[in-house]
Figure 1 (cartoon, one colour):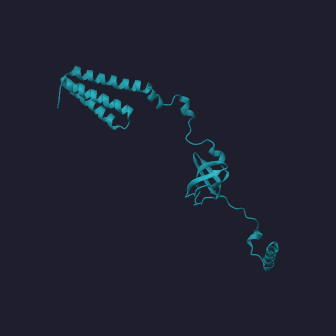
Figure 2: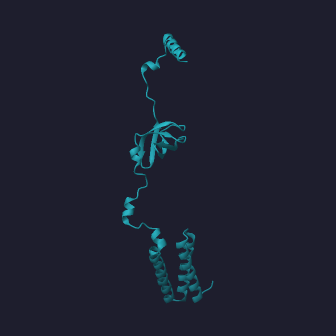
Figure 3: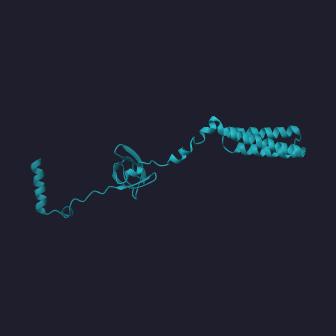
Length: 184
């Protein structure tokens, strides 16, 4: 292992360089290698003497502190942070107009298996079927909106009357047949 002044400068310099590269190209590996290199450089500096060890630690604190201080104030650093504290309060993860869709009737664009896309008026929305698979083109109704999750169910066709459920008599069937024949 190389020891001495050159080794201390080499390990500290390599560590600072790797740490600076980590700030520009995040990933974690280069930053960890940089910190390990600085720690080893400080260890080698302590072998040269107590003053060298303390000096290398103080230099490392100044370099890392300066990197963080000036890095956060750089153009790139400012783009990584919110510009105003109010921006954090006003940011919402879900579309705030989705709750207005509750009870709305629309039509599926894609099959819902159980998730898919539907249209309500001229607005496309990602939706989730309540429990069943629905083919595209099915008329649906929004039953629940929770955050960005819009739950729908197939719109039930209203029953016309109880007479429609009963089988037609022979006289009613012949009347319907003669009416269709006369229309033709």
